[in-house]
Image 1 (cartoon, rainbow, N blue to C red):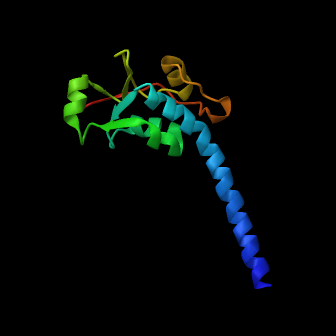
Image 2: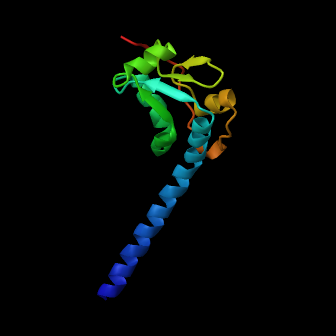
Image 3: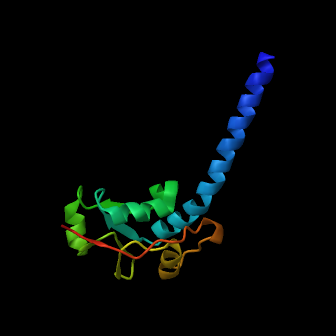
Length: 129
């Protein structure tokens, strides 16, 4: 009886862990594409719009190149960042505000699977102060 209980628990946790990895993988590929194209996001931990942008990526945000301007203000000043969040790609164009993932995909030429698109983000920004 104990073996059956342990086996059942093992299978349930295994299935749940497998489902979570599938969901994360869709954003991982997109986030990695942005990183591969040298897109950098500049922001701060206190910025609510930065938090919104991070939330759109979910756990895959770990693959995004992120510069925290509170911790590394010199990089942000050299890049000319005035609003948070700001993304800068190889083209040097600064794109400020919370952007839907679909817009980021279009702007930087990365593929975004429709199932992983989190809609409803508004374009907004805050000042550096």
